[in-house]
Image (cartoon, rainbow, N blue to C red):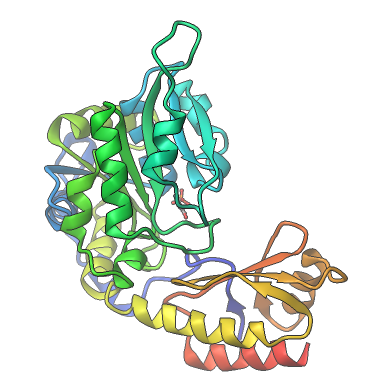
Length: 338
Ligand SMILES: *Cc1c(COP(=O)(O)O)cnc(C)c1O
């Protein structure tokens, strides 16, 4: 048995999901004729109370399309220093949109309205026009931390007052919602655009949705084609997405419970210096200075556990749909005896 804790993207479709995919009704979605894609887009838009949605192959693409539609070359995006759009999208914001990022040092990935206000450039010829604020909920590199509704509202207010577009990288928004008292509709109300991943904790093989108003999604659809993301019989993937939304959202709390459980064990290990707070399904911990993350990952691999090194000293584990209680027990046993 191989236990893969590198990411919540490693899940394979369940039997029920595969059956939904097999029986999907499909058509050519570039012609707008795939009924299952249309159904997924309508379902997700409704869920977040947005006017429209666009199904894309990846979360990188939904973020990149949003940034392209919201900005002009030479504009500036405000985001946290840990953000996915800056760190893990292959420099796409400059490659695709010709924009630059001004990085804000938030608290575990979370930036504040005050920080945004302080970083808006005045309107001088020699300064970069500030155009977009992008936040991540939950924060990936930040260790699965989430925003409260008040924090997101405060940022929304600042964006509105300063005519800035407001984007949510909600690759793991359902993980955030699981731990909070806000709903998808509460979230939808605040943002000009939202990116939601189906291929993370929700367990679909691929696919993300971009949400916004009709005019925004019309432009986004054109950019998706430019980026090469127009898919034909994508209904097979959309069916997996519909199944994931119907069946895999409520169970996310199990992933969070297992992550908390695992973090308690890790906290007690002599060779671990500290564990970041575990709010959702991501655990990041720092090893004793004598141990290199790279070597620790190799050692775990010999025991059939896959993990990610996060810099020189840190290790990341992510719990997910295919990580069971039996696996949890086994990992805890191996960590204690390492
Ligand atoms: C995974 C992820 C994405 C999108 O990644 P893809 O692999 O392109 O689907 C975007 N933002 C965050 C925060 C992520 O964790």
